[in-house]
Length: 314
Image (cartoon, rainbow, N blue to C red; front, side, top):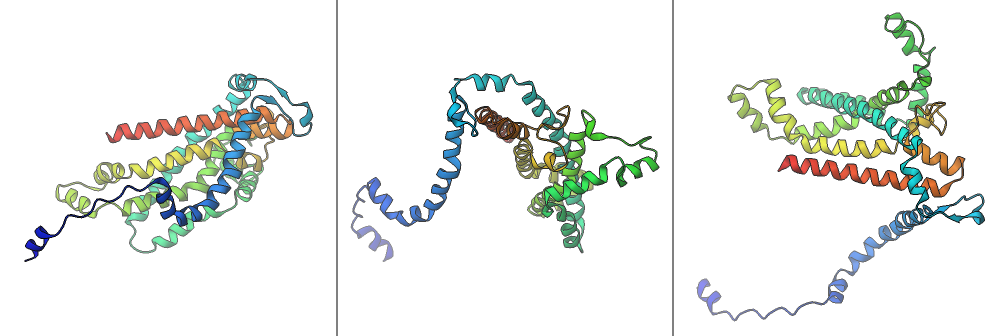
């Protein structure tokens, strides 16, 4: 009976095509709820970006705006050939190589150990995550005191025979960015631990059971199951670390370096340099150029990372 009713039922009338205006009317409330974010983005996101790009073609100082002069692409050429800007990029690359390796490596080790703990895991997760919620300025001030030539860290290293005499590491050409990377590792490895631990809990336990039946042991399971299946989490951490690292400012400034990264610019970062250009030398046009060059660099590096991961997945 049901089949007969379906066969004998009249064909459905064709639906009239809807116009763009009709579709917008149906989504009217959606536009209303989205509009505050769009308005804020236009005011505080898109407008500063467009204005910043416009200012790159001028020598402009907010102290004496009446002296603004058009310079064409001179700021872009100057930024691409500025040795101090390349020095700041070298410093941040050195810092990030140490920081990303240690932070994610330590986070992976701690997450693996916590994954195996059946009781008390929450207490350890809380303890390891506490540095993440600590103020960067406070943390860097404490670390500066502890790592100073007369501080407890160097005293311990001298008593252990690692150092023969106190080290004035802030005057060294390489040590400042490495020391800051070590301090940042202590502060941020909790993020890696939480992300990777969540990824481990998402792995199907039947994979481990099947591997155990085939005779796999701890390291083999980690090498061939855990690590490959954590690739999305590791990729996420890498992208975020690169973007945040290239925008480093507070850490260097709070630990006592000036806006030029010290006497020999040994702790100069790209954002610190553009801050110095904008607010110390009042050269807003050139500072805008440096900021946009940094944005282009971040976009290119992010695109390369996405391309690399897509190729690996294929």
